[in-house]
Image (tube, each protein chain N blue to C red):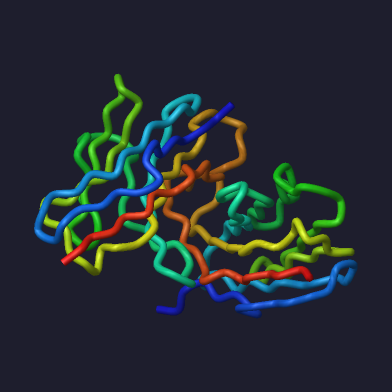
Length: 117
Length: 117
């Protein structure tokens, strides 16, 4: 079964400190990996994605993520957190196999990031 | 440009009633997805539309759920004889390309919050 895991329900960091939100995946084929952010009462906003190539992917609002195939991980990072980064973060993956539902996303359970001043 | 829009933003209904949720995808996007976000289940895939092809309904939880997409654009998700466990946020997403677009980003609407009393 395809799955994405976010082992931490909550991450708390002080403003200005680096942050990491963890994600691991178990998806067949060559997965495509995504990070989305959700603010209260809003839909999901796309942050970044890994398709192929460079393992370090840069995205919106200063976020980046590192793809590690051997550890099947795709952790989200930011060098210096802002209070405005506080939100719910979702990691997602697509099934890389041919014939699977095209582009269907498998989501982690989400990680609530809180950045305090 | 305009993003994915959904209506209504909130819907409160009584158990046993039917509801219709609407999604307007980004203009020109050929792929459309419905997902459900609930406290107990996280984000679940429901159904996928691609152009004029038959939809992939593999994620629909029961035969009370159905969806259609008219003219390759607007989609309606219908839930018949609603149950309390149907209470959730229903999210719609669209993606630009079709069969060759597995790697394209899905863009999400703000969601419809459904409450079944």
